[in-house]
Image 1 (cartoon, rainbow, N blue to C red):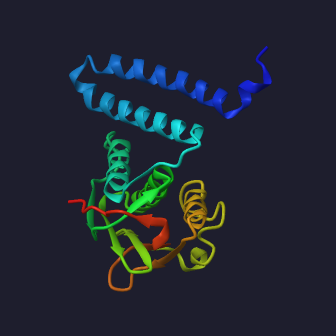
Image 2 (tube, one colour):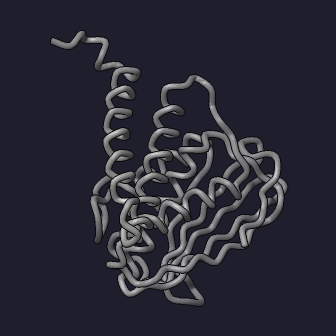
Length: 217
């Protein structure tokens, strides 16, 4: 019978690594067939991301990275998740100011991935996701918007509450708000005034974001 300490974080990370190893072996097997090589690559990249998250959770140190790296990782994850071709094509249009590095790298990747996933579900036939980031004197402002139908007025005010959603589990946006608040920031949801789609605006106090925010082409 397992010792109770196996239920602690190190024990759970150990079990996760066993799961990751099984996925790596499956990906290696798929890679022998050229038809499945892209899927194999997507699995391996997802495993690497999972290992990085597990390592970050286990470590007492908070990692930081340029916003460009966080953004690229989130986009890469979304592109891998769409590799099966069951979704219309998604394009990313990104415009960011130079100048910011964010701490808790894995958490900010999760914020972007949850917002991107929300946008993808709103655009089953495909579309474009716009990401902008501005480095202001007192705040960093990150905006993610899509070309979907927008947010239903009856749920707009409660959108960040758990299980409030027209799609999915309704936990993704609650997780977004939780992470942003942990950085003393705020997130606001609205429907675009001049275009079709939903828009999410995140404001982070400048003391929680430093360094350089590099442009993503």
